[in-house]
Length: 271
View 1 (cartoon, rainbow, N blue to C red):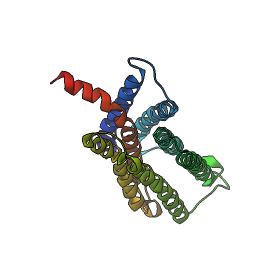
View 2 (view 1 turned 90 degrees about the vertical axis):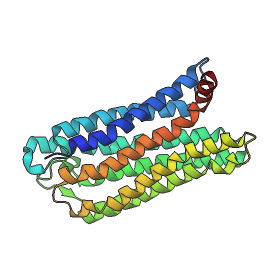
View 3 (view 1 turned 90 degrees about the horizontal axis):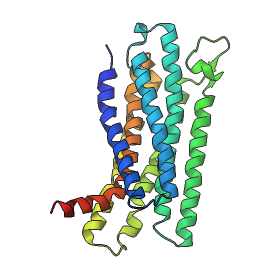
View 4 (view 1 turned 30 degrees about the vertical axis):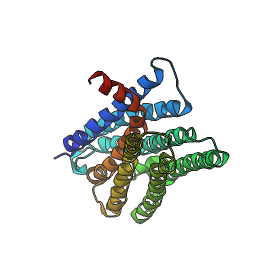
């Protein structure tokens, strides 16, 4: 029995769409002339890490993630545990760079000093959260390798209760940043000198960020499974998949607004 097929069937289409929207974004920024900005470079870093993350996730599933632990041999359990540990760290920086990219894009929408100062501080806050989450992840077991090999003599790891509380706390911070980035465009869309349909389109597209927030809420609700599971290799992928879906939707939300112009040109050509 394995959850591999179901989970891959969920994440793969979303991953593919996320990468395709990124490719479309970069195409519009390099045709007919190159017009790359800092938000494009940061998004490129986020997508590169996301591709690595997806490859490692598939590798983990092929090794046995999503199966009951008693079907796996000790070396397999260690390798799966190590891979999941690395995936958590990579995901943290994927989602951080996506949010920094969105913040940089919003930074360019207005030129007033207060707006840019506030967003600069917000970007710094995002990076600090990423560093703190990484440090917490690295510090949950001593030595670190006890995360995937708890039988190491003298190893000490957090209790399940502490792990749940920490994940709840960090997830809450990330959820707040999702909501802030999703609602910020509303502060200037109303004042844009653009047709109403353009404003509605931008609002709906940026509203994808709220969908990402929804997946984050589901992740928080399902977090208590950490405190009760006796079979983490089987149970944790169901929790992790929501974080991965949040990442893919976040990339789409950041890239789709950049595709508005080519869609309009296509509609004009097709009459």
